[in-house]
Amino acid sequence: MKEICSMCPRSCKVDRKRCKGFCGMGDKLVVAKAFLHLWEEPCISGKNGSGTVFFSGCNMRCVYCQNYNISQEYFGREISQEQLVKIFMELQAKDAHNINLVSPSHFTLQIKQALDNAKGLKIPVIYNSNGYDSVHSLRMLEGKIDVYLPDIRYFNDETALKYSSADKYFKTACEAVLEMYRQVGEPRFDDEGMIVKGLIIRHLIIPGHVDESKRILEWIRDNLPEGVYVSLMSQYTPYYRCESYPEINRHITRREYEIVLDYFYKIGLKNGYVQERDSACEDYIPDFNLEGIKNI
Image 1 (spheres, one colour):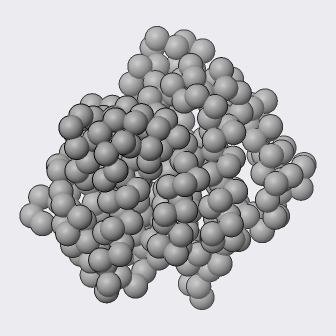
Image 2 (tube, rainbow, N blue to C red):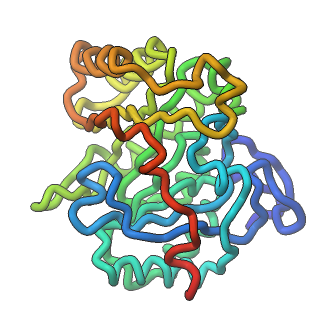
């Protein structure tokens, strides 16, 4: 770990060996769950499940975060890089279709070192982030990541600051996504329809912010090839501190989702995934119980 941390766009410049960064983490890996996840996009979860590793801490402060107990309250268990490799191998042995790294942005260096040492790992590795990533950290991972799965969540800086304390979010996320695309290109799938390489962009639709969703889709159309996939997510659930933000203290409406979906097709985008509106409930929030890391 560098003495002065600049792993994510915040560039806290703290010595994480001595104190914690904005992400709430020191220089040791902290993991809350590692399991076969069946609720990702079909090309990721498949029939066996995605070998998903949830890292604790986060470089954003989303007021509606469904995973707030690990992202902002920092529940999890500290592990070594060797133990992370063991987790990867155990998930592979369980026939996971891939290794899915959730909220990895603040542990980029440690993850790279673990992947360097995971010599027997043969399944694709997915980098699953909120999009608030730094280009220099992503370049450290070049050749190690097979699939990038970022969100582009906000278009307006004011919205990103208000709900996620993320300065210059759209510019930062767009630069990161372009670097991700440079590394892995358009999605490629195996004979069973499972993704083996490429970029899928997620977009979580926020209540009352359909116009921002449209602007994000326009940017994707204008800056990336039409072969890139977009996953339009309706799963927003008012959670955590949403009571203090009444304008987003609700689910998105059917009409809001239909407007965004119709616009997706209207502007010429073709490939992607949609969600059923019943995905917007607490039933799909993982139980962070240290599954998969208790006995490593």
